[in-house]
Length: 397
Image (cartoon, rainbow, N blue to C red; front, side, top):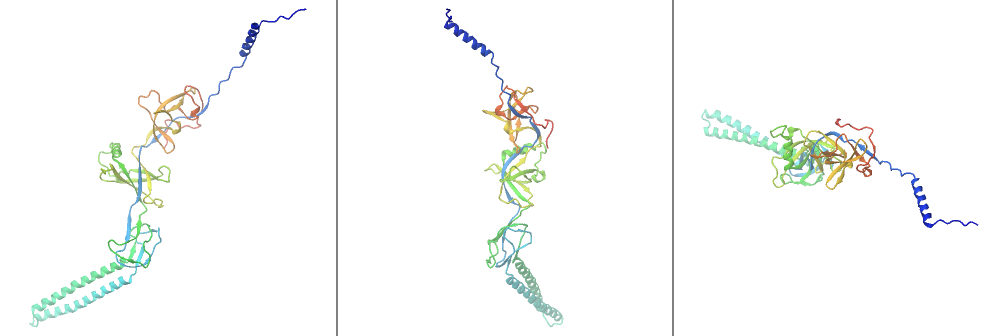
């Protein structure tokens, strides 16, 4: 009977180890993950204008406080609160009867003086005829002549009083001196109105079209503005003649959708604030702009010049540095340092190229705009390019 031969333990372990190594060699290699997909686009080149931005406010071109020039009882109010009134429209009417009575009395006085003048003129004529016959003295003639001249002057004075009384009658009808939007009536019919200086304000009218936009420009900005226009002229330019446009928007509006023209700048800088007040005129045919409204204003200080732009969301930060990620012709990611400029209304950011920069982006490079968090430096990506991309030589209007 044969006995099975048992292998030593060390030989068995060695065999198992060799089998495991052989098994590992036969395992399939691990697949590399696919390159992440990112969206890329080339920087856009289009003309951009440099602006100075300010906070301002709107004021009507004309404001009139309506006051009575004569005293009397208010008879009628001829408008509704908040109406748009035209120049010459009747607004308030005082009781005209006392004023008409004064006019009639003044006319009667004129007639009295004219009757007295007629009698005095006849007496003067009679005495002049008698003085040659010895029937009257020269002193009587002189006295009659003085009486005639006195009555002539009194007639003229009475006629002027008639004009004044008629003017009071006219003032009893209070009309709009300008076209604009009227406030509410401060008094109603039946109230006694005291006319003259210091009298109560009956209502207020403000002009609506055009309207003014005011803002304060600091002295440094003013100097920069003058420097930017020094090449155009060396003489002081009247702001109204310069035809300088500006844009503005209300607090409830996005951006600067409205336009106007600058027409006035104050003649001195305020030494306390270091600012100068500037004004622009704005058309307001639909009466949508109201005096006192706060507005954001921007004034162009340069001509449109080609500028490189990229989406603001494509810019990354590295401490105090800003950069973007670009890809080369092999789709490998690289870093490009930039200096960001101002942010435009459409979300594009102006790119200022750093001086003496060794690595910086150019209009011909593809910048990663979406999927930035998936990209890694010096590793490839799978770029998705736009179907239409403006070329760097095209200038958008």
